[in-house]
Length: 238
Image 1 (tube, rainbow, N blue to C red):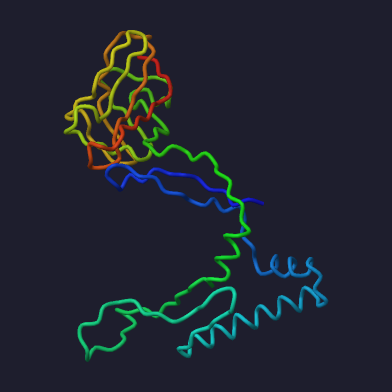
Image 2 (cartoon, rainbow, N blue to C red):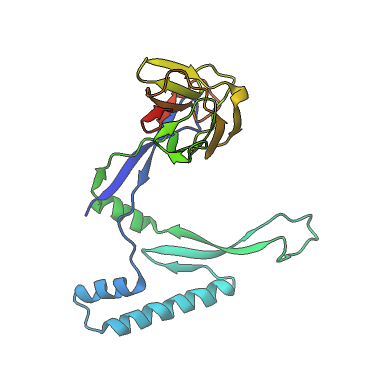
């Protein structure tokens, strides 16, 4: 089975760069590992294999608790680490301010073997951008169907935060019947967060027109970021 991966846009860089992400296909539990060992011709039982693995985990835990580094050759090294800030050389470990942790380092042999054996397969990544999930017309209590002029509208979604100081970013009402786009004024928007917009509908048109809303944002502080758009479901002007 190939190692599947996607290439994603990194919006934290200017200009935007792209990074790869491996899409894990499964997780092997202790029982599955024991069965896999059995399927490769082991002469001991699955229960015996599981018992040995459990004992190995206990030995590793005891060794790390005693301050030792555990080297499972060909697989991984495990070792104790510490987190937290000390006030000075005379300061000592305080469980309220410091934490004992466990570090790990994969074997170079394991990494080389996996790189030599694995076959990579690229998958199409979902586009990262604003999303409109639901539009509620407060006056009629209807969802994703109608918008009432001069009444409140609630939009639920994700990554909808925009910079209102930029003319091409914001919340827009689009009348598909008349092909007219109108930006919802900043003063008409009561709540503007990543996940929620509450605003006066600010519609332009006549009853029965087909329309929709768009959220346009760059998902970042730089003008070099590409403009992304979320589109609501088609609506009818009330």
